[in-house]
Amino acid sequence: MEKKYSRREVLGFGAIAGTTLLGACSSKTGDKAVFPWKYKILDVEKTRQRAYKSYFKGGCMYGVFEAIAGQVGEALGKPYCDFPFELSTYGGGGAALWGTLCGTCNGAAMAIAMFHGKPLCNQLVNEVFSWYEGTALPIFVPAEPDKVKKDYQMPTSKAESTLCHVSVTRWVQAAGKASFSPERAERCARVVADMAGFTAGLLNLTAQDKFTPKNQVSAAANDCLACHAKGKQAPNEPEVVSKMSCATCHPDSHK
Ligand code: HEC
Ligand code: HEC
Image (cartoon, rainbow, N blue to C red; front, side, top):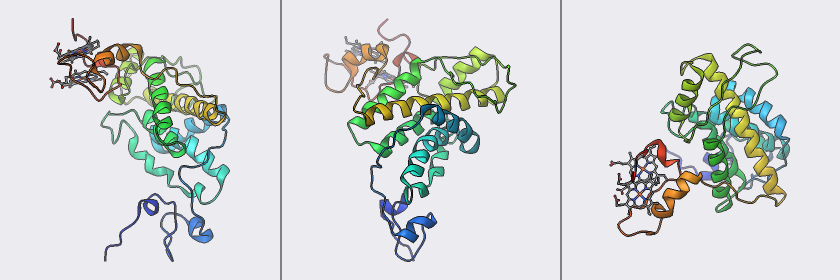
């Protein structure tokens, strides 16, 4: 017999009478988690360290998501700490190695969505994604690197895209290393730390009512969106669903 689960149950927020769905504590206490979760201010440096370690357990999306939501879950206690953070492991390598949305972006967006609904959620995601596109990463340097020697000089690169494939390839070109090399894994682990730290910083600001949207879309995409955004801005102009850096795929438009 098939049992139909509610969204809450599937997400592990509530206990089903008499059964344990995904964890022990929620069924023991009978407590229900309230969504969105209440945020707790995080130590940004600690978040980076945790994210770096989590990458090696569950990949890039998990690394960012778990470092943020896992810490808040622990601070909130049961049943929040029983959330199945592992569900985010699918996002590694741009979702099952498809090279689409970078797992660090995906994990950051998921963490943000745990605490904020729209429109704030989207503003925070915009801020994180455009930071990711336009910043030379990685910045984080672990005390004990996992995949490289301590004295390895980590090259940096700007992804100028939120796509895993583009981001990894640009780093690979800058570093002269292969996509499946230990150095590239180390690079991604450090990007995980950077993204977790940056996102936690934004969430901290938001919790203190100090977040103001600044860098929502790259300046280059903004120029294109002056015409191509939703709502006709120019005659005959096609509207597009994208805030990604346009030049990655349209380097020669209107030239
Ligand atoms: C001043 C308004 C305006 C701006 C700014 C603008 N576009 Fe367009 N774009 C149009 C219009 C109108 C069309 C449809 C007519 C045409 O093809 O020229 C178009 C068509 C396109 C097309 C489909 C046709 C093609 O050339 O392949 C692409 C792709 C495109 N634009 C990309 C871009 C990108 C990328 C930018 C930023 C670098 C940009 N556009 C900036 C107005 C604009
Ligand atoms: C990851 C690659 C990628 C990125 C990034 C991207 N595009 Fe495109 N875009 C495409 C592809 C592929 C098509 C389809 C081209 C075709 O089939 O002719 C397309 C089509 C278009 C068209 C034509 C749509 C139509 O209805 O005819 C416009 C306009 C356009 N893109 C603008 C943009 C703008 C503006 C941005 C940045 C905000 C952007 N694109 C970012 C890949 C991309």
